[in-house]
Image (spheres, rainbow, N blue to C red):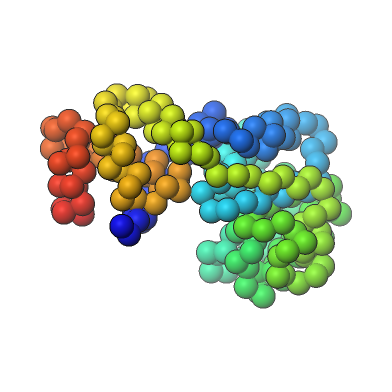
Length: 223
């Protein structure tokens, strides 16, 4: 059966506290230490398949730095027009580097050079390790200068546990039947599943109905 990936926005800001590490505890610990260090690693690069949590970690770090009052440079593949490097930035975050256009690669390299000269750390993420990226050579090699951390997808059992915890936090009763139905019909990307749970939560409140398979079907019919 075709899996569906709902195109809806995240209702909750990614944080390190709501990141379920599973097999990725080393990446989480590295970022926790990175945020607390007076002189963090100059380059930290996270790679792994879609849905493994790379963007969650980068967004969590970005949010944590902003909450501390820092300005942070951010670049991803969806940026229509990149801005010039700002010397006030405490760090630079580069997401989905494997999708960068030639223009974004030029911007990323420029940011890298200036961040390095000012001793500002860079956090980056992509689908592949630096050695396998099809980017301009000077950018590709710089992405591998520091810590390179591989992330893995959660197992089905771990994914189910995350859904149970997330549903409980929202006051939802998520039965095994509804979970089975959801995992059979939707993308198992954890980000999409969290978005789906948020949507189901809102729909259940609007319709004043419990979270059941008929409710999920009704939501899809009215989407």
